[in-house]
Length: 281
Image 1 (cartoon, rainbow, N blue to C red):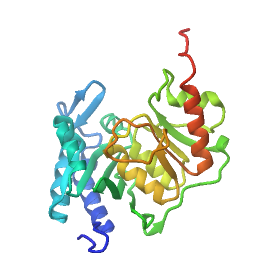
Image 2: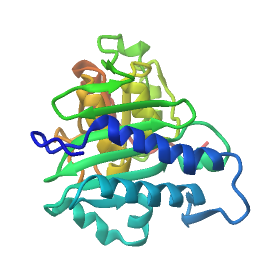
Image 3: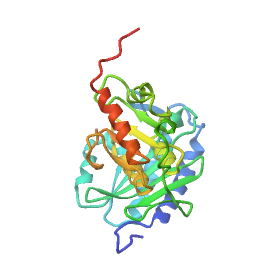
Image 4: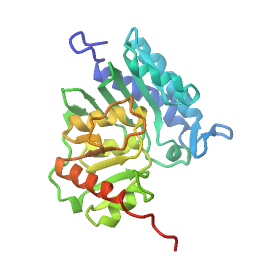
């Protein structure tokens, strides 16, 4: 059902669909994948039978929920990159990451999530992240807060930076990894990369961590999470200071629990861009 006033699907109805599909297509395949059900779609980039089944099932059920909507799914877009153009069209778009953290899933490790975002007119209007093993779902509607199990969420703002924990992925204008720059600065508590943007955003929304930094901004990884943590009070934006937009695929995106943390982390990364490459030992 679509809310006639906001044009946004009912959050709980979508969450129930995500939970149902994850329970049917993802959880039974965890630690039960057969030979041939895991392959590389690109070097180091895995896809499993569970990814494909989950994306197909979610696509069918979500399209049935909203007449005239279209889907941008990670697995379909890996085959047909022109599907990204749907983000520029008038029709509302379901952006789907069937299993975010496929490397963890394929190796029988926890730390993966199902992510869905609702995008219209180039704006993310709603988002959902579901942890199939933990049974936790976080969701948000633009301007109406972030929620989990009926409780409104708030990020853990105001902590000393040297006590903050978060994730940082890739290299951002520097030969040195962003995680290494943050650790070397001595100004953050710890960098813990769970290898899943979905679980990183979930942790930030629930107040368990305080920042998330990524060198890329693919929409299935970040559209839902960026909205959810922003609605929970986080500061979110590209390192260059511009606001998050789902059509930007390669922007360095930072979310932090408060403005002070965001500014300090950005400063560390920008300064690192001027440093020489580390010398081999």
